[in-house]
Image (cartoon, rainbow, N blue to C red; front, side):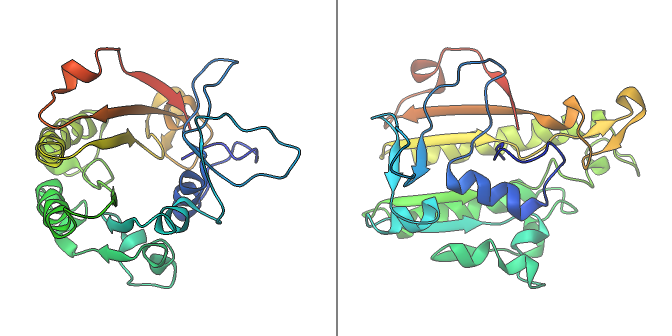
Amino acid sequence: MGNSGEPRGKKPGPRRHIAFFSGFLPKLPQPVQPPRLWECRPPAFKTVDAGTFVFDASNLLTGLAQHGYRTVCVGGVTYFSRETPLGSVLPDMFHEDHWRPEFCSPEPDSTRHQVDQALAVADNYVNRPLFLFVNVSATHVPHGHYTGDCTDSWLSQAAALAYADERLGRLIDSLTRKRRWLIIMCADHGDAFGEDGYHGRRIAHPTVLNVPFAAMLREPAATLTEHDSSPRQRFEA
């Protein structure tokens, strides 16, 4: 999800998420970057902004656990399925992980199933600090079923995004009805659908490297408009 200083080729899915959990969120397309929201404890010579959450651990999940948080993921793509050794790397980082076939992108109503699971988790830990990670799969291929096509296109991905957006609204509204939440929404990559002749995501092309990003602090019973009137921006992955 972030730029770790490595060459700009695309990283495998688990590595992008691990970079995110280490503090490498997508960057603004500008020379001066805002301070990181969180960061692994750096070497002594490095200065860290006072507003950055610094944890003495190898990743955010372990760092939050040291502060009493329960860490839970609701997987979507098969990197969270535990069907293979690679599919166990990310789930193993959490206290608790959930994945079922209906959470995966071939299921047309995958986000609704994921939101139901996420809300059940939140209900279980209503009196405990909670880090909840939801890996939305609906915008991942295949998504042609959202437009009734047998192939994927930018139109079907847009339809998938509209579908997921509506379901995520229910998740955010339900979570913030009684508790305060820091909510971060972003993608780990984009997709090319013929731009400059490119297709897919394992390429260093602006349509792949530029991703949406939003961060907001939601108070109980608040609305998105009340707490975040600034326009959304696209960030570099």
